[in-house]
Image 1 (cartoon, rainbow, N blue to C red):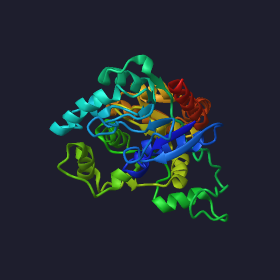
Image 2 (cartoon, helix red, strand yellow):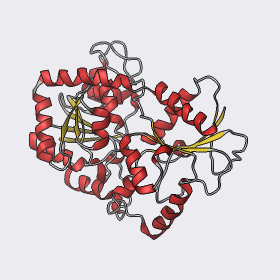
Image 3 (cartoon, rainbow, N blue to C red):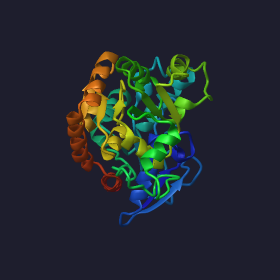
Image 4 (cartoon, rainbow, N blue to C red):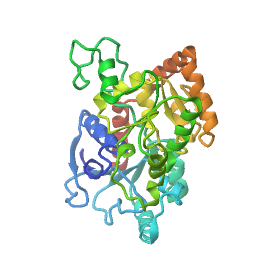
Length: 360
């Protein structure tokens, strides 16, 4: 089977985000399967007729991400429809609305759609009018680098860690980390509810460490509605020493952060999946997560869940995990068991089955 994988997410702003990681890992593990010939191509600029099937990796409702014409059988992965769920926070503009009307028609011509969660599947049916039988749910997985690191046993994967030093001390020094802290990994978009998490950490007086390029960025459009949460964060907490904004952190160090964190918190109002939760499980870090559909879907029973609209409830859950070693151990053990259900090998095999189904 000759497969074309669209390179859009690998060459645009998504390369260091969830969609880019998804594409990279999917390609890596598809190539390991028997009978697969795979090329990364820019589907908008190349002749696809030499391939059996093309797999598009991203759907953006307000920008053209679905082909205008179809030359071969096609599959698309839709990670979430956050823009459609919160239009007031992700305004489409007149052009965006027109593009969405066109794309809603075009996506109906795609042969199969992959959703990364049951939550996303429901949204695809609701907002795009796609028949349920056309949509398959295939979960993502944490990358192999995320795992438990032993104190006093340096990992060769961590940058600049010499055999004579403990990786823990190196990471703490490199990023100026406190001894105990709450970790958050990701963007500062509205649905992430990062301001609510900061409020919660302020209530319990626990430092928050934020890993993600966007949080430390000075290069953004202040007039764009989508950037309002980041603007508010910088205005209120830009100089706050208890809100530590690291910016982009490479995977080799991110695994160390998960290992050093007292707990990980995913406070989102909405997620299409919630990959950092699984990364925390794999790194044996206890998790507090918001009680929202996708996070419950992938994280139950290994998370302590909180109401994302109530910073006091998030604070209470953080405090429980922070102060109860037995509870932390219970969450870690449940996470270790749960994360075994997710692997990129499984994701690749299930994706290949979708290709085969489309091709008959």
